[in-house]
Image 1 (tube, chains in turn cyan, red):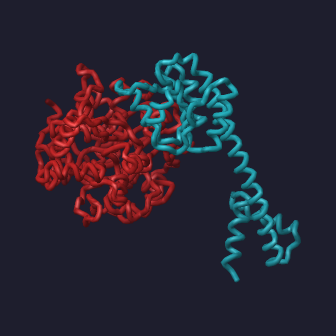
Image 2: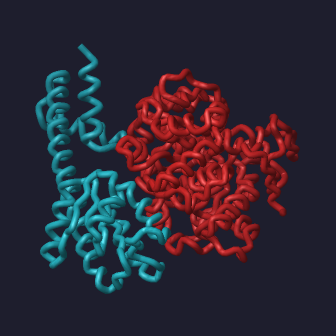
Image 3: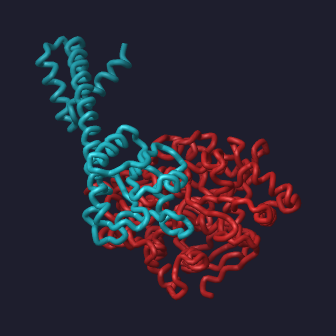
Length: 187
Length: 393
């Protein structure tokens, strides 16, 4: 069973787990009927996004014997601190239901950690591509403003911009952004 | 130096951390701090354990549970700072409220409402063979769990036999009530107010009425951090103390600040109700005055009373979470560190209590507590059922 706030990532994990020979009995995205679904689908393992508040429900279910399904967090002791660290860094946690041995579910968590990390890397890559494009645009605009206001050629305008950035110990894009917004305030 | 990472949960009682960041108290004490909004208490515990967080807003019961050995994943954690008093409420669904009124009009007309009427509803359900009522709280070691149990048990309801208790995360609470998955809950603000605003539930008792000026969240750090970096830990405490003073006296501004999606992300008008002590208890009714609904600094609110730790551990014992033979006083002393609080308080010129323990349930009115440099005005400390708590007994 997969619990995730992000539908795209949940699909990625689901594929990963299926490829690994697992059956995914339920995928919950932003739903609040966790306990009912666990009762109805009886998963062996629950893979959960650490951004989901529902972890606290699973923590509690693991303490109450009246529940027929008893999820326990993957790491019942601290002996496996390396995998705890890897899971926390990837932003994923897993709960074992009904006393399945840790050896059998470890591969599930490994797949989940790998997919979470992959998803994070994709998102970072996308963000940095987006921001460098935006930065190039703002630097071009700042250069244009300097060329027009100071009557500089393109190379001189770029050098001036770079000098301003160096003098103020800031990034080129930052100084360009300030220049553009200041220019917008002036007639 | 690398910035310190502090975790919080989007609830009104993250206010002191949010204010310390937004109004520059951390910076003023030479600290670079990154606040990290977390989704669950379990994740805060795990991030503290692997060092992904240096400190966090925590349920007061969490560091105690770790020290008592009932949370094997947690690292030893201590607290030298209480973030607030009060702040929670017990709310029942509108349908259950009507059944309680029908069962015992006199009991539901009083304030705060006891669970006497609820006991009759439960008896009627049992007679008719209906399934038990379902109540939710937010974590097994949460004050909310102990408060709900305390309120039920005071009316002779057995929280383990007569009702079904479960954990529902705060942001899911109101929806769970709306679709009838639960009949009531105990949660921090603004979630009870939201249930009332949406005409789904009625607040039966606020935490400030259940036990006046009782301890709520703590700011906790791994013991290893406090030992490795005593200076930065003290600087954090000093910044939080100054932020708490501001928070306590600028409630409208705090509501505006917490409305920011980086913090709580709820409408400022909703947050302002309980923050300014004007709380609507039932849909369509005018607000009532509960000026101490949230206390962030006055009444020595930030002092880590060892006796508060003892009370919480006794509740864990009462409900079978910890072994009867555990030395609760020793565990509370390990986790609660008034000595560290006093050093920070002295540095910023705030009076600190000279004693580590206090009896509860003996003051109906404000009273004065002696400290080394003058009296501290304390709030009422009554329990709604008249109990007196002696931490040395």
